[in-house]
Image (cartoon, rainbow, N blue to C red):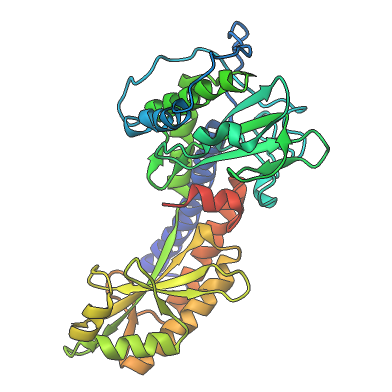
Length: 392
């Protein structure tokens, strides 16, 4: 039987579509790979960078420590002002003998650390700017208290090392014992954007002001290289940041009373969070697995739920922050289907198109692909590294 021109055209179009998808996926893979290499490439060492040796500061009066603690916060208020502070033209690569408790020393692109798989293991030079302090003799955590209280607009972590083989210890002002090494770590990017040059300068300045009080030697990172690395890391995370929404809306014009919605949500295991949305907490991990927010983009409050109504709700899945995004999506899908039946609503996508089982299967495949892309970017979903990079 001879095929018609229409059948031939459809076959050719189908072949071209498949080839186009293959080409697009290959191009997307190469683009993400370039983002990964740019984001995780360590800053080149500056061979002529000056090393700041330990020096003693003149003794302070009894009232000066409090003033010094306030001064340590002073650059933080202006951290977003460009050009604040003098640039420090030196470079830093965490050496293997400094960060020996976890395999996080800087490495060529393609040879990644396992820090994201070891909660609290220590500094993560792939995603943090790091400055180490090596006191001339062991000191307590109180010696770096001004740094612990610093606010720079990006998360700042401090670790200490006793030299007893235990490894890096997360530091708080009341951490007991004396330490022969400290590491200050500033996150290079999160969902608020990359760390700015001014924030990096303020970070180095805070640590630099602490160093002579110990006294301790320290080396500052190349700020231009770190700022560029922050931009590249932010671009990579923007490519990998995926959130999935499933909406339950009323098929008719009758809205959902807030009191009824709250009762149904709480019966399904949600609780109303301060941020204005309901959250479902995973009992095993203790973390938020998915959330429920107003389709009107208005926060839920006890008063609004008591006095008003809404046309629908959105189930939201934050893929990077979940250890098993696909399994979490499966649970969220079932919860959304049940709520749609209970409220007499319809399950739809962002464009108000009904979601049947085939459409939900396609979304599940997207979640799986997003999780795989995160792993290719050396960011395990739900890991400490992912929670840091994809936090507010």
